[in-house]
Length: 272
Image 1 (spheres, rainbow, N blue to C red):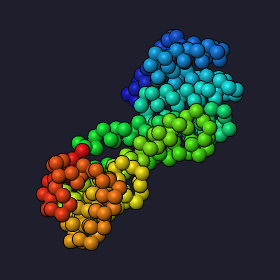
Image 2: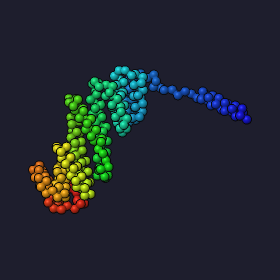
Image 3: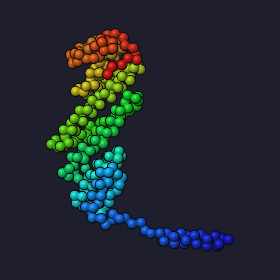
């Protein structure tokens, strides 16, 4: 019985191998393409929004022609294709690989810029939902990393064509980080955690002095000092606030906000 079973298994294996040998081998039509054709086809896929196909062709180009300008260009295109396909992890990995392999490439400044854009787009998603989700549940890590990436570009390549846009985005990100601190400070204040709220508001004022969100942070400091029974610090902060923001909506009696010296309901928040 055991011999019969062994013969059946052997026969089955032989038939399987024979069937496999009868199937036509799958050929890679790109294998012998010249570098110019590979690059042109990959660019065409990219233009059509077929990023996965474009990445495969650029990878084939890099494998077949690992040296020269086309290989370096393919690496840059791969990073951009991952970015366009919203694969942040792969895009960042491709960017870091290029910077490591080609630190002196004439277009390496673009890769620094792309690294910033990848993180910048991720933090835009964070800001889009910050009003709908408890802000203390979100860590604006991408915001800080985007800022660091743009800053690295500006520091290393101040004359880059991407420097001006990077500086503009850095200004936006500074306020985004300050606004995050204000959101958290508001969250704590609304729940009666006035000391925690004060600490976050003070951090926003100290760390982001040129950010528009600093106005609301100062106002929150006043509110928290009032709740904590610190009238002298409250009054000192008020003088600083009025000197810097004499027409602030937060102290306008017609804005719906109660003045700092009155009692705020826990549910109230500065109007935006």
